[in-house]
Image (cartoon, rainbow, N blue to C red; front, side, top):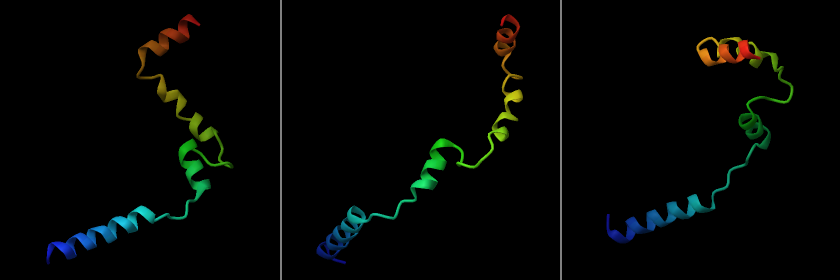
Length: 66
């Protein structure tokens, strides 16, 4: 394929990418960024809190001094 055809194909692809705008689902984006949905129970996240301090010896020291 000649250079002119190749350049034309690249230009066409670049133009399609530049002007392509997919539909955005803002609700799904918000759930992903906040880490939870609107109706989700927060107790699911709290059940892992007990494991967060087991491997951290400084956390035990903080809890004893408090």
